[in-house]
Length: 185
Image 1 (tube, helix red, strand yellow):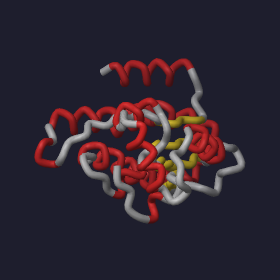
Image 2 (spheres, rainbow, N blue to C red):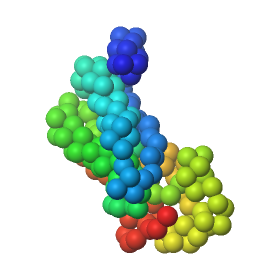
Image 3 (cartoon, helix red, strand yellow):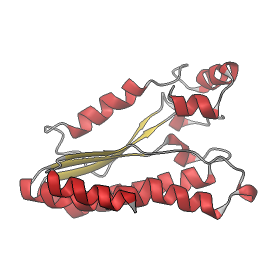
Image 4 (spheres, one colour):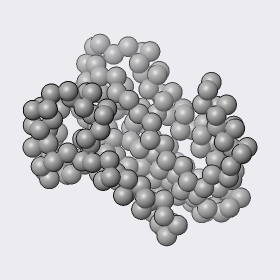
C-alpha cells in the first residue's frame, strides 16, 4: 500500500513532532444505496491511513517526549442525510483520538480532533454546486455564514502549540454553532 511505504520513508528520514491528518472525501448515498466498496475506501482513507502514519511517527515523538496529533473529523458525525460511510468512518476517528490520548499522555504527546461544519472549500462546492443552496445552508448555521479554512487552521494551530500540552482526547466542533441543533444540507 502506498500509504505504508510513504509512512515508512517519512519515519526513516524525519523525526515528526506534529501530525495533522486532514484527508477526507464524501461518498454520498442514502443508506439503501451504500456500496461496501465505498465504506472500505473511506475506511482506508480516514482511519487506516491515520493509523499507519501515526504508528511511524510515535517512536520519534516518544523519544522527544513531545508530540501533537490532530485528526480532522466532521460535524457530520452527529448525523447528516446521505453520509452513512462518511459519518461512520469520521466517527471512528474520535475513538482513535480518545484511545491514543490515554496511551500517550504520559509521554508528552497530545491527541485531539477537530470537527468542522460547513466550510467553504472546493470539496464543499463540489458536493453543493448550487450557490443559492450554499447560501441557504449558511443561513441555517447559527452564525449565519459558512466557515473558512482559516477558521479550522487557527484551532489546529492552537492544538499543535507547545503550550497546549494540557489538552488531549478532545473533539472541537468548528461549525458556527451547527453542532448545537439540526443542520440540513
